[in-house]
Image 1 (spheres, rainbow, N blue to C red):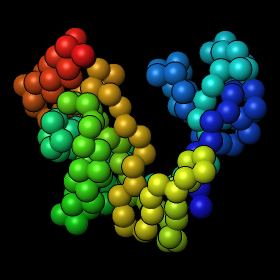
Image 2 (image 1 turned 135 degrees about the vertical axis):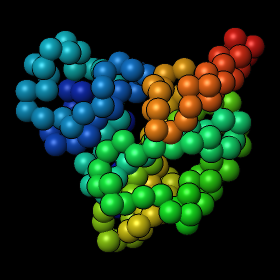
Image 3 (image 1 turned 180 degrees about the vertical axis):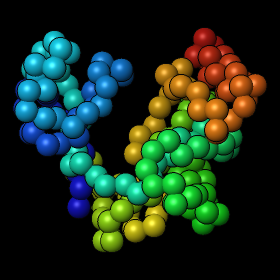
Image 4 (image 1 turned 180 degrees about the horizontal axis):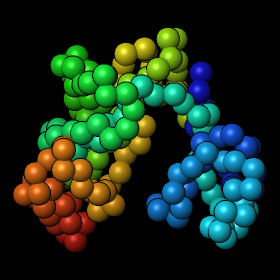
Length: 172
């Protein structure tokens, strides 16, 4: 079982994947010896999420607009792996599981490299099952904070995607 725990940079164990609680406070990174001297100048009490480093076969950015998959692109990993229809169906299930999602967001998903059944544990709750060859949710990025991947969607689609989220933000 892998876990996702909230702590601070000063208490985060070395070798864990750390990501800021505050959006865009720093780039997510593996916490290595000397990280605190890396030039980020972040205080030890900076809140962060920590999890064990995971091995993925490949990772993808999926653009979602009004609850529908707009497009996707592989951005790292083994290009022999691709999103087949059964894997795309798993992504659609993830999208459908969030009915009150923002109008536009991106999901980073991965194909897991492990061979074992694994449950994602966040705090005291279990949230998902990971199987070899299954798609795993890595993170979700709000539409206002997500870059453009030209292999995923067209510039016109990206503009419409950004516009949908912007209109939602300014009218909330």
